[in-house]
Image 1: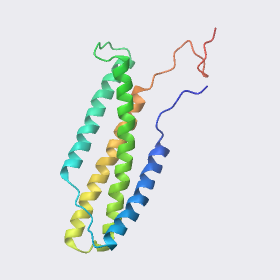
Image 2 (image 1 turned 120 degrees about the vertical axis):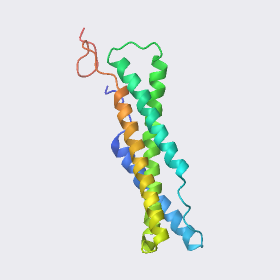
Image 3 (image 1 turned 90 degrees about the vertical axis):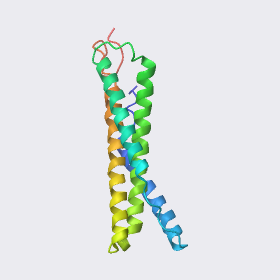
Image 4 (image 1 turned 180 degrees about the horizontal axis):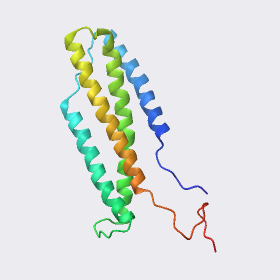
Length: 160
């Protein structure tokens, strides 16, 4: 039996593409009714940066324990929670990439207007930050992965 490998990059790409399509359709529908695309808030970008940094710090601590350095604060439960948070961060980042890219796509026809161009840049920066959050989640997921033991063969069963 093959162990669970966690969140895959293809899953993140599919989530981002699905969110882009759905959000683009929703935003186009709202725009046709006279509503404008909401401005991206700086709070969202700061929150994503904070979450990504916290993920990396927590994942680094788990990685050190996994590699043999003792740290009584890192319990198996905390390591498992770090892994789940990393996977949630990766999925959240990929969905947010789709949301921000959809906003850019809706605003692109008006890119010649200076105020809209500034909004496109803001959404683009948010998309890059969301992408970095997804990457941080995938990196921490790999740091939380246990290495195979010496007494196991490549199928994961004991050699006895």
